[in-house]
Image 1 (tube, rainbow, N blue to C red):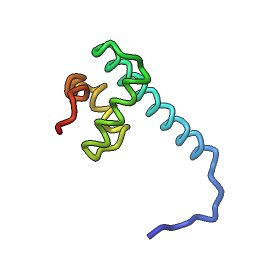
Image 2 (tube, rainbow, N blue to C red):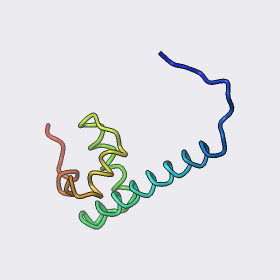
Image 3 (tube, one colour):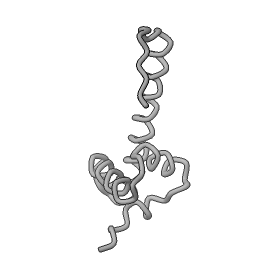
Length: 84
């Protein structure tokens, strides 16, 4: 069920959401850079590889990027070709 609050967002809520978004973007950029350095590809291609891996494994992009940055997932695992 979806609930709707009639109360406007408080400035604190806006700041918190903005900080979370920027943090996620930073982790995504770092993860894409890790893939780019490992595979000698562009960071944009690194993002594409992250998206492909996340989609193939039915995972959120942000979760895959965080696992990569925290070294719970290796760049080689993400860069491996998809099984046919």
